[in-house]
Length: 407
Image (cartoon, rainbow, N blue to C red; front, side):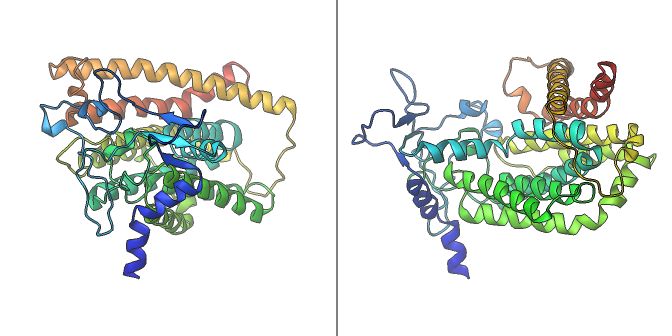
């Protein structure tokens, strides 16, 4: 068993998977036209592509406490990290564009762009009942995953031999894969929640959830961001959490939308979790990402409480899914576009106001990249911004839909 774990944690299986899918590190011998993809290639006085710089993550070389983790992300055969400055190879060759685009798109399904589109779309167009369960499970699983990363501090795969396709995630640890956790949680929660409302072949739903989560998991190996073990453990943790929390869904849902303590709980508890996040000796985006998730979930929770009448917006009896018509699709797209545009405006307004107010309070410049990484500024700034987005998505956007008669 120990040998199996070591092999799954090794970088070689990741590199072999990349080569099998047509992704290779660039070499001087490769010259196929249209096959070369170079990211961050140095020229003139710029840094070469294989080097790391603190400014890539908004840090300051003279400020160790705000410095991102050095590239000690090489999971070698003996499990020890490597501190080589050549770890981050950003030049690569694509020989199979089908896999390249498939896994690039799949990787996006586990990122913020997916969360801020699919979760609101579900709440606005499918069913608030389903949306509430997705948001609750998403926030719980992602918080556990993010904290586990910074407690275990397991490195990411080694480059070389692995090709790294993403830059931002390099400053984070690898175990477990939160992409795998989120995709597994969202896909299977969606299927389990909708099976109580709509009549459809449950086996097909499970198959769809399995395919979706598998593609996202494989995309993390293809992009070189996680070992096989990271992905497997992430999927297993989220599957276990879904199974454990499923019996409590109805109770938690009823408590959230009826208890007078819900607004206080939804604000105080996430804030405490953000301020007591595991401390690191370098700057990592995991804390900011966690605050973003908890802030959005807190705002949504308060919105659920305000909209406690939404508990009657679904039928307790199974019904057949409505027939998809052109009018229905147009209405859903209209509601989605109106809602997303509104949220983008809210985000820009609140983000600017919160950051300026906090920087003014602590007497630092808004343009100082280090200031935004200070806990006393980053946590309230992120929390207020995304709390406003969650509250707006669940309260203001539905009201806007009613005003525009998009129901």
